[in-house]
Image (tube, rainbow, N blue to C red; front, top):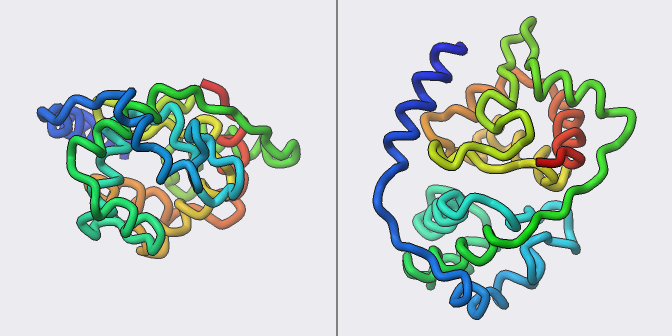
Length: 203
């Protein structure tokens, strides 16, 4: 599994190093009002923890998600109509703006930290769950070259929902089905614990 991850990471790093429109953060800020209702003016989504924090996210990852919402590769009844009218430059501008904003780190539930950290850093050798930090990094900063997202400080509710969506086939836009392969081996309890740990993880 570890050799597979290394090979996949190298391949993805090469594959995602493609030319794309350069984003303008000032233009993105001017266009960001439509995003602010859910994600907050600075991308920290203070209203609903099921709406992800996009502040501090890698710009290419934001762009990919917007393009996937627009194309239908990723489905969401709220995001699809938001992304549909955007062109590539607008997506790049929004990504440049929100990626430049500092992410606010949450607080993990104390009774979940130990189990969540163990899974994040070492995985579960008995069931074959790979450590989260293999792709997302020890501090949850992600890997911009491979387009693996920064997850440190993300809402636990959103992380847990995302893991279950990958497992249940509701979300399938991960590269080479990597996330789907990981989460099929995770229990609901493990998902809840690692989501709490990630919420309090500071990069």
